[in-house]
Every structure is written in C-alpha cells, then in structure tokens.
Length: 567
Image 1 (cartoon, rainbow, N blue to C red):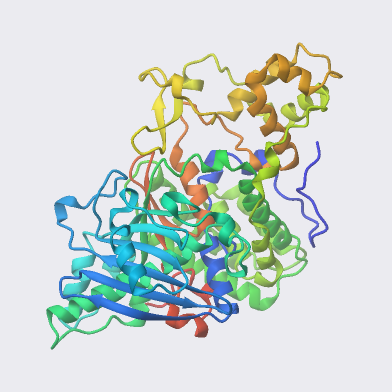
Image 2 (image 1 turned 180 degrees about the vertical axis):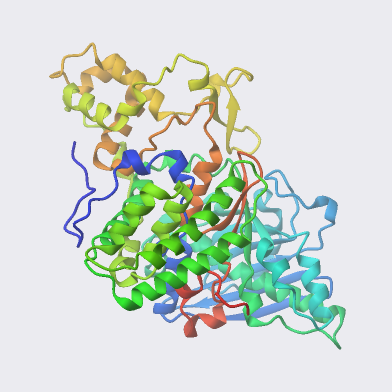
C-alpha cells in the first residue's frame, strides 16, 4: 500500500501509524500547537511586517454604531467592519437559529468606502437573511459573555482592573456564534484569495477576522466604561488585556468536516506527525531548548488549572491532565533531557505513563522549542481536493481489496447488523441546511442519510468485492454496483493519504461528535475546550496572543501559554 508518510525530511523516527493517531479518543485529546492556524497567521503577519489601525470609531454611549479595523500589508489591505448593536438580554442566544446579536462583522477585501459601509450596514446585521458580495471575505457575529462583559465595564469605570481569577476561567468578553467564509452568503470564493502569501494554509481570512474582533471587544468595554464614568474610568492593563481572547460556540455544523475533507485532514495531521517525528529524532537536547521546555510545562500546568468544564466527558480528562503535567514535571526532575534522542525517550515514557490527554499535550509542548525545525511544515497544511473525484476504473479489484483490508481492516470485525453499530444518522437540516445527527431507530431519517459512515460503507463494498476475481477491473465492478462509487473514490484516496481516514465508526451509538470538534478546533488553535453537550462546545481563541499594536514588538509563540508569574 503506497503512502506518503515517509519522506526525505530530517528524521529517523517513523511517523506514528494512522491506526494509532486517527482514533476518535486520541483525536478528541489534541491540543493547539505551533502549527495551529491562529499561530501560523500571527507569525506570518509579524514576519511580513503588517501594520494595523482603527480608521473609524462611531460607537455611542450605549455601545451602538460602527467601527473599522485595518490590516495593512506589503501588497494588500483588509478591513474588519464591526457593527455594534443594543441587544436585549432575552434575545441573546448562541443557537444558529438566532436572528439578532450583540455585534456583527465582515472582513472587507481592501478599504471600504462610506457607500460600502452603508451597504453592509443593511446586510451584515441580518447575517443569513442579508447578502454580502465578492468584496467581502468573511461574515460573522458575536454575543457578549453574560458573566464577564458587565463585570469588566464596572471595574474599569470605577478605576479598577478586573481580577484575574474572574478573567482567566472565562477568557473572553464576546464569543462568536458563526464565522462564515469561502463563498457563503455571497462572500468571495476561496479561489479568490487562496494563493495570496498572507493566507497560505487553512482558514486564514476567518482567523484574521476573529483576531481583529478581539481588538473590537476590548475597545468596546473600555469605551463603555469611559462613557459611564469619564472622571474615574481607566484602560485595562496590557497584561490583563492579553488574557482575554474571543470565545466561540460551535456545534454539529462543524463536525462532519473531518469526514468530508479527507485530503485536507491528511495534510493537517501529516504535518503535525512529521513535526513530532522530527523532534523525536533530534540527537541531543540543546540546553536552551530544555530550559524553555521546562518553563512551558509549568505554564501548561497553569493553563490546565484555569481550564474548567462541567461536562462529564471533559471534566475528568482535565483532572487527569493536571495530574499528568505534575507527573511530567516530576519525571523531568529525575530524568533531565540528556543522552541520545532524549525527546524520543520522553515521548516513549509518556506513551506508557500518561493519559491520552496528557500524551497529546506533551506532543504540543515538545514542538514548542523547535520552530526552526518544524515551522516550514505550516506551508504544507492545505490541499487541492479536486483531484480526489477521479476514479481509476482500470484498477484491478485485487488491489482495491488490499487497500480496503489495510485501511479498514479494523472495521471488518464490526457487526454492522447490530443496532448499536448503526445507531446514528448524519443528515442535513431543511431549515438551516447544516449537518445534524439523528437516532436511526427513533426518527424517520434514513432516507436523508449523508454518506458519512466510511467504515460501514467500506465493509459493505468489500463484501460485494469478494465475489469478483482479483483481475477484474473496478470499472466493471462499479457498472454492477454503482452504490459503491463513493466508497471506491474514498479508498483510492486513503491509500495515498493514510491520515485522511478516521479509524472509528462514525455512526456508532457511543460515538461522541465533540471528539470531531475538538480535533478540528485544536488545529485552529483553540483552547479551553468546554463541551456543553456531546454535540456542541465553547472554546477560547487568541487568549494570550498579542494585539495588533503589540505584534511587531512581541513573539506571538511565546504568549501561547499563560505567564508563570501573575501580571
């Protein structure tokens, strides 16, 4: 079975096998890293010398109006246009069916005219009910944190700084409930910007929008504090300000992405696994790297202490992570990073000692000191997905059988006749045209099922293939069995890109969609993963990151974990 797991890259430790990595329990334990898209974006903006300003601020004492934030690069300008609204508390909802929000946003491709702002003011606040144009790259909206927003305004208005014990566990003043791009609701198609140097990779315009939204939320609370008490109000201190990111509520609409974009998922995971293999292959640990790593372990422990969740799946994982980080710190005291391939020795110790949550936290921490060895991999984390639609009909059935046994052998022992194995149905809602997950034996949904059960479909195809001679062609097989076309196409892709496939049953009764969400969000760079059910989560983005006015004089990667000393 051909793969592209190995290459001429500088490593002698093999990449971890897809059968180990692409399991939902492990994928649901991934953490943000140097290769996460938020961090790639900030490194690139700093390296390319981008500048930022706020040309428009027309927000009144109620917090209603419009503001613009401009990103000025070597070749282009992008402008976030923010519309602030006076939303009654009873209308505030994170659900996708909401029709009003505290703030709505679009990322404009260039510098908007006053006519553009007027046009967008009539559409952006309507979100799905409005329309934007090819001049806009992103459409988004956000709601205030009920717990923190008013508290921070009150503190600043009284001349006080908000307490870090209030700020850290929540970590944001507003949370986005949708960030749309790539052609949705009239926005520019991805082809418009995909080759621009500042946006190479995945989800870069969307994350630029979120980063600028963060500035708007902090500017807004400071503005409202000043309006409330002009004689006593103060600005937030830079250290506390930086501890606030942007929240996000994400549900099932994102979950099938890992299934519908297999080439892209392979690119993401392959880059991460290659980075890990490179670090594990380093022959000796440089003293400065060891010191930095020890410091990062301590800072990761602070992050874990600030990470809270009441969900019965996530809460014990966080508790286990805290114990794992204490165990890791003690291990480093007794076993400093010395000898041959010390990073590999540490990884192997963790694989036999720590929980999955702790193991994957260690993977991210091991990457941190080694930017010069791994940061180039960020440029490989995109994919041309058009090539996967072609089916090689001349392929002998025997080769396809071998591919299926290699990539889906784990699925062939599953009894897909049992109710538990096929308990779920992925479908698309009529109202919002977004993915949903239903119960096969409780709702009449089977007629609307989407092809998001690759394990079941591969097993079914292999059963049909058993009747065919190994020398017969796939074209002949599909003439007889056209129902297997999508499974053939997927098997052909997975044979070349082994990290493209999740090695678990995605319609099983015990499957947790939040594991899918956690995996994708870790690649975004999200933190404070907090499931609110098994189907939607809250997260924090850009917490600790520099603000636009700080980027030129700071190291965004050094700010990814909380500081050891309180600010």
